[in-house]
Length: 102
Image 1 (cartoon, rainbow, N blue to C red):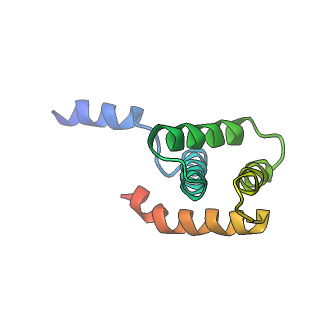
Image 2: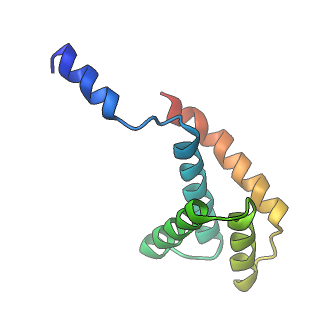
């Protein structure tokens, strides 16, 4: 690939560090964590994670995702507070963020 083509391709690539992209990845990670905690696997886990990302994109209130996950976990017998969900979100983001930078 010549320099011009490579440069053009890079300009159309999504910015993996943009707040929107990082936030969507965080939502997917917390969705996968919650799915695993609820015992969901494979396609069910991926589907649940996608539903969390959709809610995050469509959300009206900042805590909507955390409240949904805490409620879903409670419905599966896992007592997890909204604050604990937020802590897990921050942990996942901190752990994965440098993977996305390079």
